[in-house]
Length: 355
Image (tube, rainbow, N blue to C red):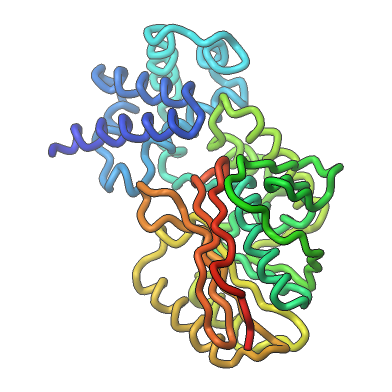
């Protein structure tokens, strides 16, 4: 496969995923980019001559995010006229708008495409909560929350959201963030949870006090998904009000430091979502080793839980998996799409115990 063919294939594949994940407009935008790549231009050359793996580097999402950022800032009137809430344009009109944006904003795209997409999908908390509830039900202890790949820290304030998980209503019904995924299977236990402390790390945390970084987060939300945009805005306001700070750190180094000593009277919960696949194998191995060592030190009064919402590979649905110590137990609790829209809840195949 030539480099050009590989790039075009990456855009076509991502368009299909966007369509399946409820963003037909973003799928059309990516199709328009493919059409425009056939014409000459500096931005087209930047894309076609991409030096890395266009799929692994999420090149289509970088381009889509750049186009959306121009719309959000009102910097390109031609694009603004084509984007929601305006009426959907014809493929030819949309392609012409994309081509015009590429021609008018070469410097912008040259800079924007250098940074990998960084999202903070709030709806994943609607999946993670089921795991947190299982942990709280098993231990009855306050939770010491540790998030890897926390980005802007929006899912660190998960306990300030409102939820409807099947028959279960949980959390704050007046929260600006309300999560109600399509829930298949039994509802999880609706126990009360108390967060004793919360911390998170990211190799490149998003500073929510910086308007440009907030714009970056928003630009990677697909333009025709108004509910996602509203949730993001609400979560940003909650995280800023809570004074959330995400530590800039290597995930393996930070994990080892955080798990060095058990905290009596609290359940330490290490968690992450759609993060693992981006870690080098060496980093994954270091985190696994640190968790195993911490698990060996865990006690009934200071248990450890490792909750991960990760796909077995990028093309498959993510699994919600919970491991608990002492007396290591690992259970798959659920499967869901990466945006947390549809959750197939398995529940505990056997009791989660810390003995």
